Length: 87
Image (cartoon, rainbow, N blue to C red):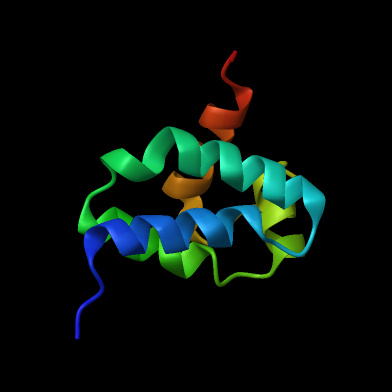
């Protein structure tokens, strides 16, 4: 059975805010708040995969300490753009 779109958005929002390290909670919650509602199904699939990555790796990619994998580079750049934008 397929997951309802609204349930998927809620699940991804929760996964964004309940991470292993507080820094990623803050970063991904802000990103989810800014972008989830406007994402296509393909974008949601990619974000779901990104949320399966290790927090330490994600933090290093988002903070620019390490280069992200090529398939995640655009999404990591978008996350950076959201967290760097003035509130």
